[in-house]
Amino acid sequence: ARQLFWPAPRVDSSLVRVTFGAAKFEGDWKGYRQFVKLAFSQRRKTLSAGLKKLGLWYAGEHAKKRPEDLSPEELETVWLEAVRNGRP
Image 1 (tube, rainbow, N blue to C red):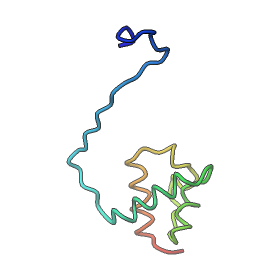
Image 2 (image 1 turned 60 degrees about the vertical axis):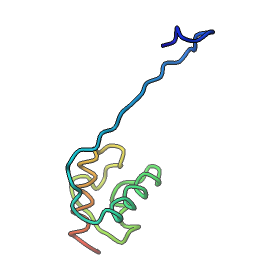
Image 3 (image 1 turned 30 degrees about the vertical axis):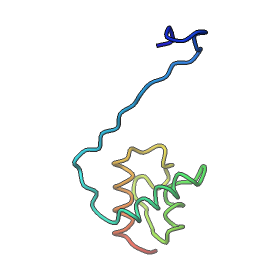
Image 4 (image 1 turned 90 degrees about the horizontal axis):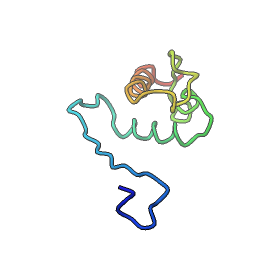
């Protein structure tokens, strides 16, 4: 809708609607939120490094990946496996 403004802006914008599905999170939601926040706040760190700060251990297929390389479903899987494995 650039043509609605004068002078016309040199950027495009979009509106995004997020609709949450009916899928339920299985497990500790507060712990998962803390894990995601910690994982994304540590620049250039792997998931296993983020989990160690929470006192958890994970050595699965995604251990050496960075959080931004995984889908939300994969992050949930990592969290649930780490909680099952517990402390090192």
